[in-house]
Image (cartoon, rainbow, N blue to C red; front, side, top):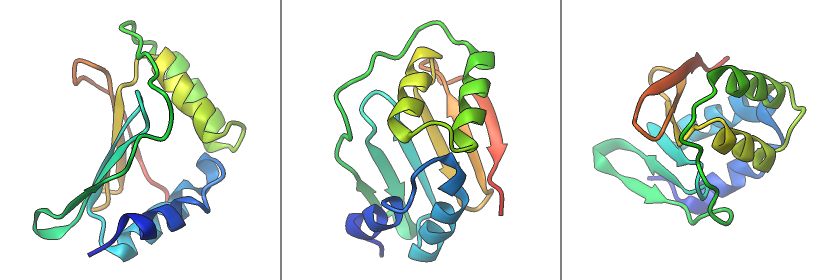
Length: 129
């Protein structure tokens, strides 16, 4: 199975949202089946086959996730991030301000789904190949 070190090495190559598709390809090659990233502190739970899981440490001090969800602002911020206009920390701050609690990436479905604090799906995107 994969290690947290292998995942960190793959993630180190990501400079903006524009690098995300290549990151996903590397995770698939490592055996990651899906992962869940929590905006409040940036920790991620990575899952593989047979119930294998590893969890990263928090990446930053806790952010406050807004109770008020602004999907349109989030979509605008996401687009800017995917175009390489913002770094990861800016994107996470933008998510928190727009009420995004977490995102879940499915390697099988090649989707990234964003959720609010109540577990409502805000947006699902296909991951480009």
